[in-house]
Image: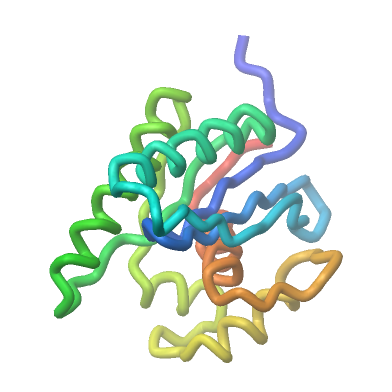
Amino acid sequence: MNQKRKSTIILGIDPGFERIGIAVIERKPQEKDNLLYSACFKTKASFPFHERLAQIGREMDNLIQEYKPNALAIEKLYFTTNAKTVMGVAEARGVIVYNASINDLDVFEYTPPQIKVAVTGYGKADKKMVGNMVPKLIKMNTVRTSDDELDAIAIALTCLACERFSF
């Protein structure tokens, strides 16, 4: 029996291995989207890289168990000149996507220009423009100051704007 959901919950992730932006957004029919949780999760720099990946995995598992999201929205990696950073972020993304997959979440990936268009209407928007638009698009109890956190909220909003979820 296919029961319709009363809401859709999206786990938005701005990936990294030192800092990870996290947002959990809920959409209900005929209501403004609501920010349930957001944070900038930081791994311990003094730990070996494999333990930092394990920290990320545990945090993702805890979030998935607590909020029971319907989907994961994550930023796609863009090529950068720092190969070491790209490799670390790619490995962290792998842990995050793996956690989503073993918990049967749909996974949606968006490029930075896609996120900027969805949130601001302009694919070359800067961080300030994105940061100014996010609070206008979603109910938030407090202002978020971390770029990682705001980016995660924008990624989750992009998923809600681009994908079709039935209620």
